[in-house]
Image (cartoon, rainbow, N blue to C red; front, side, top):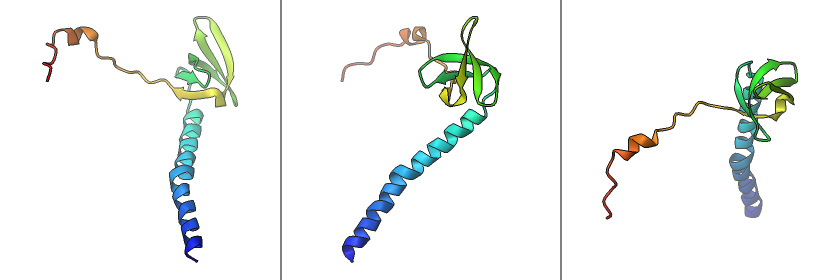
Length: 101
């Protein structure tokens, strides 16, 4: 009887560690793909960066270079690119290096 209880416990832990997080990721990824709009900067599963120019039911027109528009399946979009502020290297040059310790 205790062996059966341990087996149930192992399956329960595996469910909470693997299945539930994967389900949440799938759900949020599908929501992201459904909320795409023209003008969004996206990154495809293949690593291409581009800007959505037109949306259709299951496809997108993505401009990957000036004047180059590719037709992609909506499922090919891996992420929406976010503007990342990068701290300027010049700002760090004014600081003195830390003392060895």
